Image (cartoon, rainbow, N blue to C red; front, side):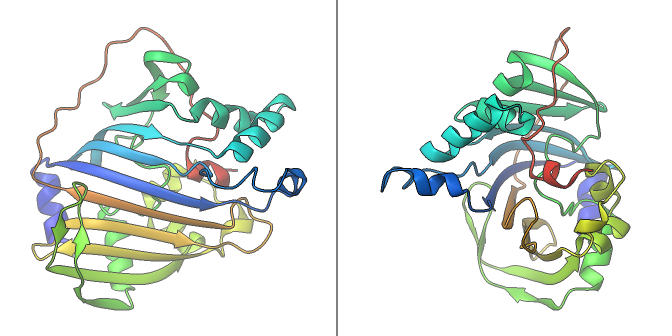
Length: 277
């Protein structure tokens, strides 16, 4: 807690690397494909790299690159669904293999890339300073309320094994916190999670169990934050696993881009979109 408070007071910049792994429900259309046709390729796991800056409000600005790559069959099925009017599928097709930029600064979210409507920067709308960073990672380790509640409930609180930071450097001496919560409890304890969901949690999702983990260096600076959940059958994803890594010895200047255009926020680019009402 003290380390995060100090980082916020210093307005510390941080480098971020984030990978999200999503297991989707079985698509029976794959059974009609020739043997080996669907083998290999990704299912659209998002990768994000970039920088963020802390302030009294937590993450006050972020500048991230986001990419997704789908396997041949997954992309074919998405195109079929998009042609049938599925808005989320249509946005995911635009996201495939392209590099997208998202930047949140000064209470405004900006985007650039095919899914936002073009290559140049566009204004998406009013958002929180961490909007460009969060959307997959549901654990905001820089929100003191969230952090305090999670650490207090941790079932594992002791020296940890080596972890890797955003630059893939091994941090050998660490402290590890791990535990479990639910979407319902996280919604109650975490204002950023409530903001991500637009202020409402569908009752169907309240009981989803989340396994979380936080690894810090021995000064208390967060290095890795993880969240995993496996909802029961009938939910939008069979399993989600998110790991966010941080490097602290960086410089970052995040400013609002020049733009006089307005863009759209893709319907399906964030995992949290699956759980919005």
